[in-house]
Structures are given as structure tokens and as C-alpha cells.
Figure: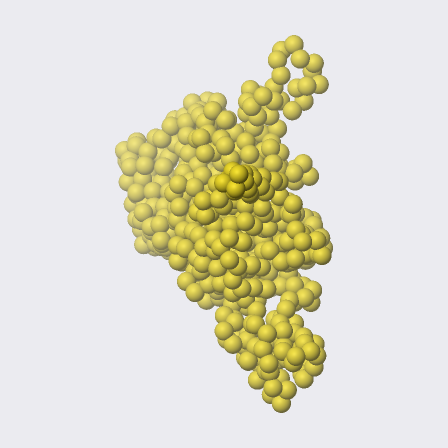
Length: 600
């Protein structure tokens, strides 16, 4: 009897554990920014403040923009992509506006009432606008939510392939349990003790991952097919997938503007948000979600400010934007966040501080080992001091953390609304700037190109920072079929002249230019441009606005008119000479003549 009772108890306990593990989560998932509000709000603003729409319109004869409908064919998806699309489409909140139209089973039979076809696209195809596919990728990055594990970095080495939790420690059993309940971890991993326990692959590893269906490597694969695939439907399919991957990249990047992610502070994501035991999460996320939602982010910029930044690349690569340094020497997003802001789990422990210490010495004691940038520590002080409550202020007067003195005389640090407000007002604009720059890096501008369609020549100067550049010239028929007509190896940092472009095209046909190259570090660069029949010049987009001429210079005299006429005659003579040279060149030359003269 005793043996039987013991077995029954053991079996009952096991059943209870499994039932608890399989129970639906009783608390909201623990994320950084809220996906359906803050993340999508940042993505909306980044897309509209970027040059993507202008560049697409200029390169497609006004046939493609952010609001162009793109279709994804489930039959073209890989198995991991198909599963991801199905899960994201079914889990996306209706208010997010990114649930695709159509999809498998959306089109009813021929005998069904017409009203049942309202969400049918064509066959089993999914359809969204280009902007919506980008937003779809933001949500797909948390399918399942456990993917957020690779949104952290090692605060001591941002390029380390793995990270481990810092600051306040949580037992591995607690971490596995909370990962399962809040972040979509596997019940099997929890029971076998193989799931998340405070470390994992880092954002740096994800950026270099060639197996993840949403990683940048897959994004550039899709982008190349979006330009080079023979079939127009296939190109739209791969462009949509490239945008989904770009949305996932924006999600990862935006999370690096959260101190808990940049500091590998796991405990910060399970703070009590209310008196309810299961109501846990990240207070910074909840404040951003409740105060600003999706459309009221605290980022106010004039049209002139947006135009001044549109299309600029503050760093040499996507990696440098997130994990490295910017061109002006400033820190990339992860380092900026780690070095200037504290998270709740990396605050100093309670300590006794001599009331006779100065306000600066007391601050130095509290901030020792805080991983903050020395610029934040210089001039840091407690205000007021001595006092029961107050703030640790940086030399610039920013609240780094709050403090309170308990009955035993210990100073306890914490983060309150004033500290979170300061973080939100600084980190959200930085996240937006980085997101905008990432989009402009994925879809960069063409250099200024002189085109002579009749002579079949192109002339342009290529950026010296590009590696292994190659120009592909494709022919496109009226129904959108493309074929590669020639490939030309280009010389970076030189003025290249490409000869032998096809001059005889079918009716309504087009020439399409595709530039392939790499940035230093191996990051691909891909550009596409459809040449109009009357194309004479491709200008960088957005165009650089020059200063208005002075009144005295604007009123040109007779001498200026004569000089202008002489310049025009010289340009015409040069053009005739180029056409004669082109006529002597072979029809399908695959070479580029470099010239070291500066760009005109």
C-alpha cells in the first residue's frame, strides 16, 4: 500500500507539473518595445523619413513605391518560411493592419456567394503593400516570441557570438519557467532543463546567420532575386520577402535601444507591473505603449530636418550602425544605449553611504561598476544630498537613477517615471534614426550616371569604398520578362565608361541596370534602375539641394550668356565624339573603361 501510494503521488506530481507547464500564459509576453504599437510606430516613421519611396519611384518609372501591392506565393516559400508566414498571419493583431489579404484557403469555390470572396486575392497568394510587408516582418521576428533571445548583446564585447545575463541573477529554473510562460519557450525544454537559462546567441551572431529565415543574409538573397529573376511575379514575391526580413532587422535594431537588451539584463523583463503576481514585464515598454501608442511617439521634427537626414548613411555598414561606430566617431546604437542608460537589473545594490560625503563622492560610490560612459560619470552628483529621496544626476543634469534611504540607513537605487521619461525621450529618436539609416543602407542611391541611349554608353564615378563592383545590364520585355544581356566589372574610386549597351529593344522593352558590390566587411550592396527610352541622366536620390544663388550672380550679363553658349557648344562636340567612339566599339562589350578624371 505504501509503495502504491508513493507511486500515485509521484505520478500525480508529474501530471501536475506537466499541466502547469502546458497551461496558457497568465501574463503578457515579456518584450522590449511593444510590437504592435512602439515597434510599428518606429517602423512607420522610419519608412516615411527614409529615401526608399523616392528611390523606388525614380528607378521604376513611377511604377513602384511604399504603397505598391506585392504578392507572396506560398508555393515558392521554403518550409521554414511557410511556417513563419502562417504563424505570423494568424497571430497578428487585427489592429496592426498587417494581416495579409488572401492566402491558402481564402478563395472559396465557384458556387460560393460573392461576399465570401471579399478577401480572396488570386489562388492562394498573400497580398500586402510594400510598407505592410515591412511591418509584417516586424511582427514575424517574434514568431515564436522566444526569438527575442538573440536581441541581446554582450555588453563587454558587442561582437561576441553569445551573451550571458548580467546584473541581478535569476535561478536557471526560474528563467526557464518564465521563458515558457511569457516568451513562448518550449515546455519540453523546460522539463528537460535544456531551454533558456540566462545565455544565448547574440545579435551579432544573428546578423551573420545564413540559416535563419529572417536574417540579413536571407534578406540580400531575396533582394538579388527581386532584381534578377526572369519572371515579374517572382520578383515581386522576393521583394516582399526581402521587406519581411528588413522588418525583422528593424525589430532587432530597435530593441538595441532598450537598456536591458544592450546590458544583457534578463531580470528587467520580469518586473512586477502591478500587485497581481503574474503581471510582469518591462516598465519602459509599458510606459511607451500606454503613453504614446503607435502614432504619438515623442519625436517632433520639421520637414526641413527630415529632408536633411533623408538618404544619409551615418555609418559604413549595418553592423556599424548597430554594433560598431558611426562615421563621426559616435557610438553605434547598442553601445550608445549601454553606456548612457541604466536598466533595473544593473542598478547598484543597497549600500550605506556616509552622509558626510559630498554629493559627487556619493554619486561616484553608487555608480562604481555601472558600465556607464565616463562622460556620464564626470560631474555626476546626488540631488538633493543628504536626503531621504532624490536622483543621481549626470554632469549634464540627466536623471540616471533615483534613490531612497531606508530605515536602516541604506541607500537603495531604483528607476522611476522621471528616469524612464528621460530614457524614452532620448532612445526613441535614436531608434528611429537608426531604423531610417538601415532602410537607406538596404536600398542605397545610385551614383550620378550620364546615359547616351543612342550610343549605348554609360558613364559614372563609383564610390571608392565599394568592393568587387559589377554592373549587370538586363533586357526587359513588355510583359516584364528579364534576361541578362551583359556583365561589366567596374573599378571603385574611378570614373567608369560602359560601352556596348543593347540599343535595339522589342516594342515597349526596357534596359534594366543592376549594380552588385560589397561594403567593407562583406555586406552586399544591390541597386536596380529601369532605364526610360529617353534617359539622359540618373541623379542621386534624394537630389542634393544647392544653395540659392546670390542676387548679383543670378542676374547674368552678356558675358555670362556668351560663356554659357561656348560651354554648350563644347558639350555638344564632346557628345558627338562619344557617339563616334561608341559606334567603333563592339555591340556587346563586357568591359568598362576607367578614367581617373573627377566626376562632372
